[in-house]
Length: 541
Image 1: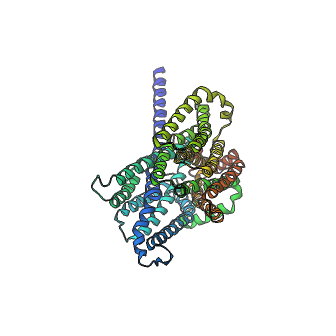
Image 2: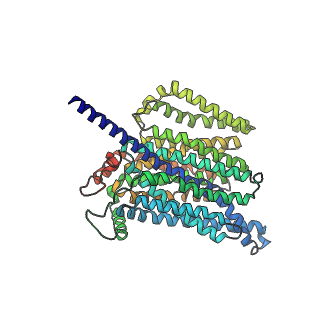
Image 3: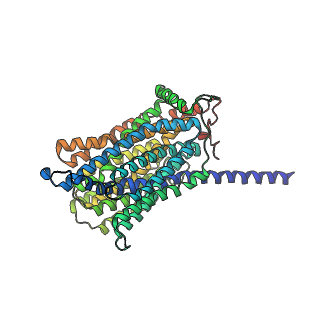
């Protein structure tokens, strides 16, 4: 009898170990999707496509320009730039309006994963098709860019909507942070490859224009290949019909459900406050990401510094995104050292920047040596002193407070930017931003997931995407208005601080525990086929 019980116990332990292994593999496969899609964000959307579009479109407008108002070539480039800006705005607006409807449809029809696969395959194919873009094909370039941006932004929302289904409630912060971390390192690796190919195109026996087109093709292949683990390992969550047993039109029901949700938003007051807070501080984060290169160029920094800072930021964001996911987890050892390291970086980098500002003349090797020495000293301080020094603060850290801590440090960035004078400071600001942007966004996503009913995750993450896409409108607008009034880019960058302050105030008003309880009660409504799996772990063990 004892041997039988021992065999049964051994079998149960093996089953639990197998379940745990499957859970970790599925969670990693989901997180790896950020690695897949960040290649497009970093290489195509941010680095290569905007200047390449202007290069292939400007000749089409050159003949129609009149030199009376300035150089015909400059006017042609300006026309191409304005057309591209309109394409960016329309693509984001279209994706923003479509995302909540697609999300609600995915919930009702049970097609979250399948629609994500369709958007990924379409986005990857369209990205690779950009290889055919040559001088004069600017109309095709706009069409491909528009469609790829729509596919990308819909895919981002659908992927995020899977998070409450694949992660246990206690693991939301860690797994969301892992996704962002992998995204930054993946985007950085591909950007490094494409930048190297571009810079050394002559040595490879190809034109730089061809190197850019090869980069576009590699982005699409990268996106599709690294989506395969998600396709294989992440199951499709069950459908969540409008009401139990209902068999109506999923498309019509999507609009009905979306209308009900918007009408009953007061039931999700904490989630709504989170959306508003996220929108406000993402205006600040988005403005810094979008305008950093333009601001650096306005101050006279060369292109090598701007590209080098962007590359560095990608790799800095990887460990710090992991660190932010670690901070709120009370079960983890040495959390105090992690909190200490965040504070160390937030305090000491502006001090180093002040030194560089006063003395100037620091070469690139000296700057990177100084930053590396700073981080090594920070690790030693945090392990031997900081962990005990900040023990009380660490006990009070949760996901919301970790985000607020990051936003408080973010407030330093535009203030520092106001006084920036040297390229050494620009590198240091880039490192500081890299230590913040992935972690704050990852914990924001996991907080939002905890406030979201799992049965409506596609719909609610569609609204999250709507908020995220509109972020980046007011920040650049305020930047431009202040610049027009003062004609000083330093005043413009300083104005961005306003969005961080408003975001911190609004986020402080969010009661995460109350909102999470409301979402959990909705998931427990009898008859919903996918009811509480996102919180209890029934969906994935």
